[in-house]
Amino acid sequence: MQRIIIDSQSNGLLRGSALEQRYDQRGGLCQVGAGHLVLTTDPVDRDFLDYWQRLGFSLPRLMAVGPFHPGRTLSELILADAAACEAIRRMAADGPARLEFFCIEETERALARALDVPAYCNFDLARAYASKLAFKALCAELGLATAPWFHDPDPKALVRRGAALMAQGRRVLVKTETGMGGVGCGGMAAPADSHALERAVRLLALRGGALFLETRLEPLSAELSVHWEITADGQVAEVSVFDSINVDNSYRGTAHPPENAPGLAEAARRTVLETLGPHLAARGALGFFCCDILADQDGTLHWNDFNPRKGASIYVRDMVRRLRAARLGDRPVHYWHEGLRLRRGLTVAQVLDLLHGLLEPGPEPFLVLSNPGITTFARADLTAISATSRAQARHLLNAARARLDAA
Image (tube, rainbow, N blue to C red; front, side, top):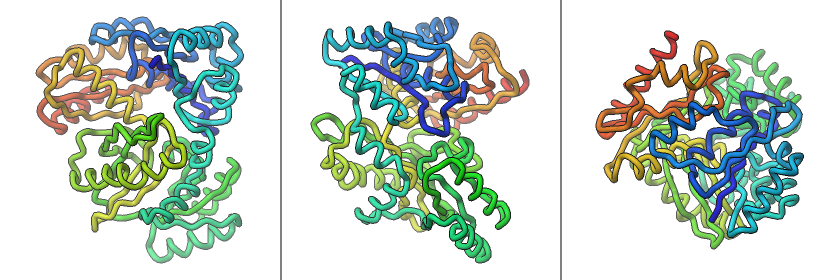
C-alpha cells in the first residue's frame, strides 16, 4: 500500500498560522520512507534530510505545494496545484494507494473527492466525533467514565454553574467542542476565578461551536494517551498507550513505556480492544484514533478528548520503531519526547550543531530531532532514547534543553 501523507493543519484553531502549518513536516518523515509520498507546504530543509538519511531512514518522495498562504491549508494548496493533483493520481494509478490526513475536516473531504483516491478515514464518522460533546455522549452509552461536565447553550448558565463549582473549591475548564492541543491552541481555558471564567466564556464563544464546562479531576494518578488503528476489514490494531506530558493544560509530549501506572495502561488497552474500538468499527470507522485518559486516585479511567485522527504520539512511536529496525536492533528502548520552546528561532543546522555529541545512535542515550519545519519559529521536537530507562532519557532531554536555552 502506497501511503500519501498530507498532514494538513486545518482545524479552525490552527488555520492561518504559519507555525502550525509547518507541523505538516512532522508526520510523514517519521512514518514512511521510500515508495511513499509526503506533501508539505514548504520544502524540507536540506540539512535535515542529510541528517535523517545518516540516521538510517530512507526518504519518501517529497513534494512542496506552497508558499504558505494564510487563507489556505495544505489540503487547499494541493487542490489548487494541478501538478500536485496529477502526481497523486498517477501514484494511485500505479497500485493500491491511500490518502492519510492529520486533521480531518471538510477541506480534506473535498480534496479526496477531487482526487478520487481512497482516504484512510470515514469522513462522516470522523466529523461527527470531532465534537467532544458527541464523544461524551458515546462514553455514556458505553458506560465509560469521563470527567464531570456541563453544557448549556446559554453562556450565562455556564458562568453560573462554573462560579458555583469554584465557590465549592473546585477548579473548572472551559472547552470548545472542537478544540485541540489544550490551552496552548486557544480552544480551552483554565480560569483562576469567576471573573476570568466570565471572560473565558465570552472569548471562546467567539470561536463558534458549543462550549461546555469540565470539572478538573484532582489529584490524578496518571495521564495517559491511547492510540489505535481500525483497518479496512474492521480490525482494531496497533493499540499503544503512552504517558502524557502536559504543561499548563497543554500537550507538550509523550513518554514510553508508560510507567506511572502500568496496570492502568493495560486497562486502557483492553477497553480499546474490547469495547470502544469494536463499537466504532461496527459503525464503519476507519483509520487512526486517539484519546486522552485521566486516571483518578481510585484508579478509575476517565475517557476525555477523543480525536478521530492521528495523534502526535504515533509519529514518535513510528519514528522510534523505524530507527530500531535501521540502527538499534530488537532490544527494547525507553523514550521521552517533548516539544521545546526555544529562546529564538534557529536553523536546523544551528540546532544540530548545538546538540553535537548527543545525536549519534548507539548504546548510550541519544537524541533525535524529528521536525525540521518549526525550528525557525523557536520550536524543536526532540526525542531522547535510552536502552536503560526513561529517567535516563529524560535526563538527556533536559541536558539538551539547557544547551538550547543558552543559545
